[in-house]
Amino acid sequence: MKRTTVDTNVFISALFWKGIPDRVIGIFKRQEALLLLSEDILAELERKLSSAKFATRVSAIGTSPAEVVDTFRGMAEIAVPADVPEDAVRDPKDRMILACAVGGKADIIVSGDKDLVVLKAYQGISIVTPSDFLGIVNPPTESLLDEPTTE
Image (cartoon, rainbow, N blue to C red; front, side, top):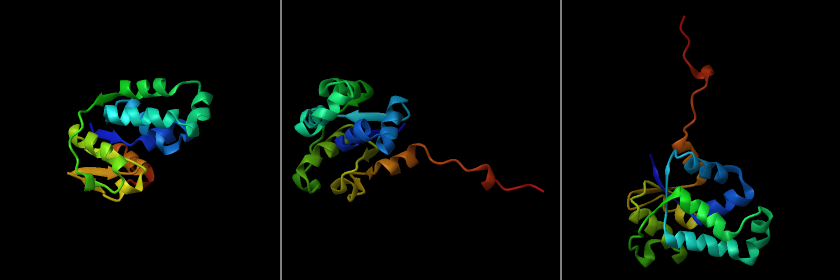
């Protein structure tokens, strides 16, 4: 089972816009991969969901930022973040994602953040987009049409 750290942007996209990010979260709900989060990531998620930018959207889905965070906390193993150098990634806010992944011995980081995705890997941990993650965890199966025929 893939040990996976997920960036907050994926959770927010899953909540409000569904699509591929929602399918990524479904993988953790079905326990097809292990979700690794840190208290820092959960706090950041709650801060973002509590912002004026998302207040109306959170209210519209009939929940609170704290309830959303509690739901994700319940799906995750909480990792103790590792120390990550300041120059590991361009945006200092992304260090918490790397720190959680390293501390939790993750196999994969899933993010829609270009500053992270451009790295492709950090300390042996693959950094992939939500679409790429779906292909890794649930690779497409071959079609019956692709099967060789026997004569």
